[in-house]
Image 1 (spheres, one colour):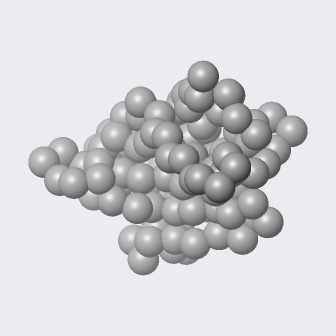
Image 2 (spheres, rainbow, N blue to C red):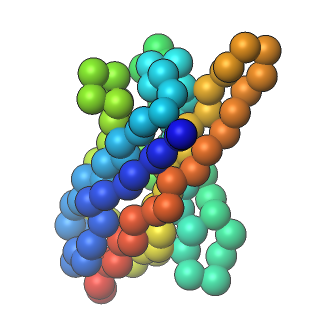
Length: 119
C-alpha cells in the first residue's frame, strides 16, 4: 500500500535551518508529483512547495527564496530544505504524492512532521 513517511522536524531557533524528508513506498515515485504543505496551529493546511516529475518546482510566496524542494528518485524521497526559518513557519509539515494509475490520478498524504521555531 502507499506510504509516505516524513522526518526531520524538530525545534529550531528563528533564523535556523531544517531539512525535512519524505520517503515513499507503494507506488512508482518517479511518476509522482510531490509537494509539501504546512498546517499551522489553528489554520488550514497550506501549500508550501511542489516538484514535478521533470524536476521543475513551484513555491508559495512565503517559501520562495528560503525553502528548496528536491527529489531523489533513486531513494524514493523528496526533501524540503528550509533556511532562515521564522516563527510563522511553525506547524505540521506533510508531504503529498499525486500520481496516475491508468486513466485516473490518485492523491495520498503523509502523517506529517512537526516543526517548532522559537523566537
